[in-house]
Length: 132
Length: 139
Image (cartoon, rainbow over all chains, first blue to last red; front, top):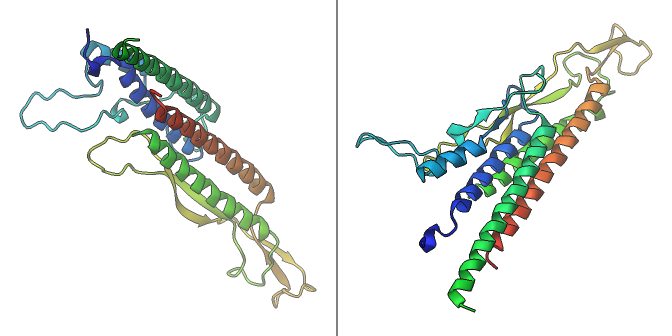
């Protein structure tokens, strides 16, 4: 029986990751007209697998020395990868607005799906606590 | 909370695109402003976009970047110089100068700016809906 803290399972982390991805995709869309801007994205699957394997923040670095500085938060900035452009543009920008929009919408739907899962977990817990 | 950053990022894009729309409007409005000397003639203005550098906030690693207007540059394309001695603004040699505004280019610019503006508004709307859903979690 997991504790209350763990009851949300991977969904809590997935929600965070989805929010971060929304941020990245929003910045891609915001910079759709910026010369030399390179579109970025994260590999959601591998980051989630990393998290499941280690049960820790996927981006956390190992501190092997007492004087190592541990960065705060669980950023995805370091794990962001550049997107391969479908067609090059003359100003060096690799944002494809349609692709980014589609990804953003898909990400928003997945975010809502995760919210639904969390809601289910909360309802389960509530039922268990009330006992009715 | 990183969903709030989506508002900042998309908001910066709205700002940048509206500056672009403003310069387009200014260029189109002055497309036919004549002048009698090269120095006083209106030149087409274009904003230069640049990705915002992440603030060194220390605590949290920021993944996304907004956009800001780095500068507004004047076009260096040659002005249109025509010989019209009867024109009231003609100089001693009978020449008038017209701005180097390319109306077709400006129209294309305007459409691109308004499309980008729209897509960023959609981003903000979606982020708002997600935030509202998150707020009502567990109710």
